[in-house]
Length: 262
Ligand SMILES: [Zn+2]
Image 1: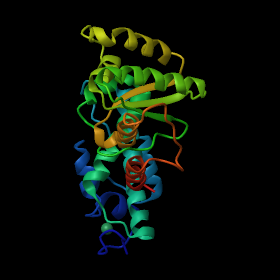
Image 2 (image 1 turned 135 degrees about the vertical axis):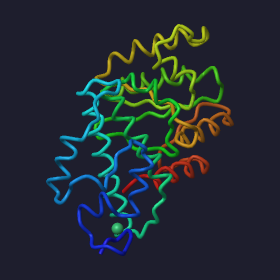
Image 3 (image 1 turned 120 degrees about the vertical axis):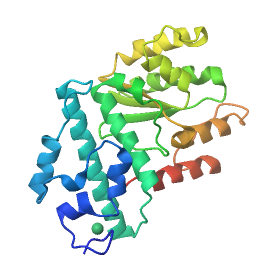
């Protein structure tokens, strides 16, 4: 029996495409894909759906990019549905569609950025509601600053730390929209105050095999935000590890951990 709806036999077709509990995930992503109309009967059909996704040519993207993006969307959605199912089976977790869809959108965008960093320009308005883990072999750095003018300095410092630690593929997240736009949207209107820092960040970014800058809302940057707030109350230099986090930071960290798919 399907562990999500409890009213149908569990099969690949039902669980991934037809179950009433997972259908809002497909619809929430808003791609115009109707999962119940896809001819899927076996795991091989699902694999084929990822490798040869149905794409609608004629929109403003080259077919190769469109195919790669559609494959990523479908693969991550199927993986997410499988994780939702397992969380229900093993932890009896309730399905929160809003959080699932927002989290999934964020992960899909991260993967898109890796194949084409320019995509961020169109997607800046979509921000995940909670922190999401980066793809494997990619390190994510979340930054924040107590002073508005220090946001781009924080981004530069994050990249310097990443370089010192020999991280080769990084995603750098910040809730400073102006800085992320300055780094990701080709524009001649970068604020003069951050112009040289942005140039330095772009220069340093060339040293990574993959370096993606993402704007996220404060909800998805909670640990960095809480750390910044705490650090600004300290009289001097302060550092911590996961075993001695200040209470407010620990709370934000646990919130992120709980929101992660298992
Ligand atoms: Zn079901």
